[in-house]
Image (tube, rainbow, N blue to C red):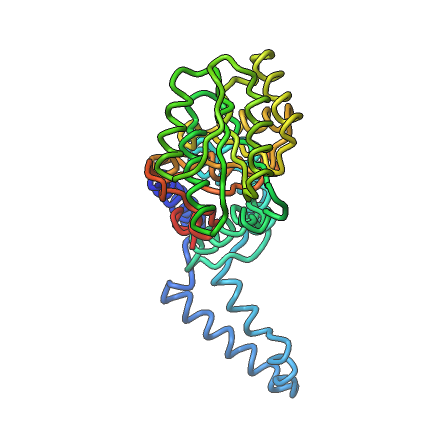
Length: 348
C-alpha cells in the first residue's frame, strides 16, 4: 500500500532538490573556489593575528560563517511557490485533500523559506520537513479498549452502502474477543437484502449472539433489544450494524438519528473505503455533522495505492482513525499507526 504515492513523493522531492541545486551550482565542489576560500581564510587569520584578535574571532565563528556561505543557500518565498508545484501535483494526484495540501505547504514554507539549506542533503531536509508536517496531521489515536469504561459499552457502525460496515464490525468483534471482552451483535440493517444473513454468518464464526428482527422492522428497536439483552446477560460490548446510506437521503439519515437517539452509543464509528479517496473524507465529514462521530475505520487500505484518504481524513474531520482494514479475514484489521504510514511513504 502507498507505493504509488511513495514513488510520486520521492520523484517530487528529487525534482525540487535538483532545481535548487541547478539554480546555483555547489561552488564548494569547485577546486578553484576551494583554493580561493582557503586563501581568504589565511588572509583573515593573518589580519586578526596582527591585531591579536584571532581567538576572539574563532569564538565568534567568523571562519565558520565564511564556509557556510559557500556550502549553503536560501530560497525566497517566490522561489518556494514555484518549487512547491511539483510536490503539490504529487499530492493532488494521490487524492490528498486541498486543505491538507495547504497545511503541508505552510509547514514547508516555514521550514525552508529564507533558512540556510545545505546543498549536499537538500532532499533529506525536504523529506524531514514533510515527515514533520504529515506526522502532525494525526493525533494520538487511542486504543478502543481504553475507551471501554462501562458495561454494556455500545458501538454503532455507520457509513454508505458497500463501505464494509458489516465485515469490519465482525473484525472489531474478533479484536474485542481476543482481548477478553464478551460481545453481542445487533442486526439493525433491516433494509438491505441478505444483510441479516451476512451478519449471522459472522456471528456463527465468532460464536456470539445476534439480536435480529424481520426485514422492514424498526432498526432502533433491534438496537434497543440488543442493549437490553446485554444488560440481562452481563455482556461487555454491544455492536450495532446499520444500513448503508448516503448523507443526502433525508429519510435514512432521520432513521439513523433515531437509532443513535435510542441506543445512545458510547462510540459511533464511520466505516469508509480508503480507495475512494476524497469521497471518503467528505462522507465522514458530513456524517459527523449530521449525527456526530467518534472515530473512523478505513477499509480496503491494503489495496489503496494512493493513500490520500489515510493522510487527509483525520485532519479534516478532527477524528481518530481507530483501525485500517487490510483484507477480508477476521484478523485483517490493524490499529492505526502513523509511524507505519510514514515508513510506507518513504519518510522514515
